[in-house]
Length: 146
Image 1 (cartoon, rainbow, N blue to C red):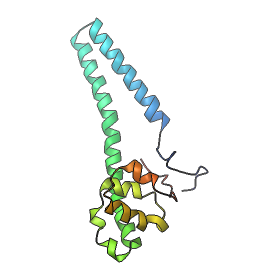
Image 2 (tube, helix red, strand yellow):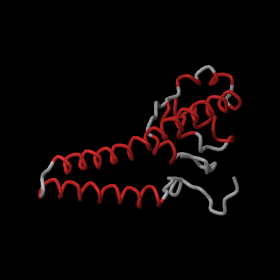
Image 3 (spheres, rainbow, N blue to C red):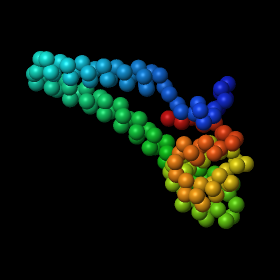
Image 4 (cartoon, rainbow, N blue to C red):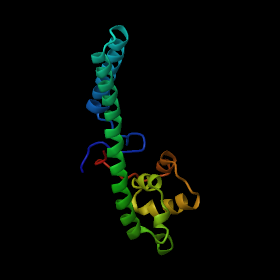
């Protein structure tokens, strides 16, 4: 996917303003208002409205969590296939040792540095996404993430 901006560790997190800021802000404002209404004018209707507001907050977070979980599963499959093609023979047998965190981090590594980083990640048992991503020298952009 062509994109004018170069993706790096510093800017790779995807923020959708209409979702992350506007929608979340409206849901929080609604929750705060429903708490206020329930506190000053207690009624069964107010309590039910508060329950709906809490459910909306939960829905917001679970929708994001579920999308990210599916994305991680796809990345796991994609990276196992990529590693099977690019790793030297001695590392291919260790592909199933990679954790989801390791695979999701290594996906940004270029083909040229993937084997070296993969070996380091496995040998040193590195599992922190942020620290693994910071080791990448030649960043491969991923513009299609959730």
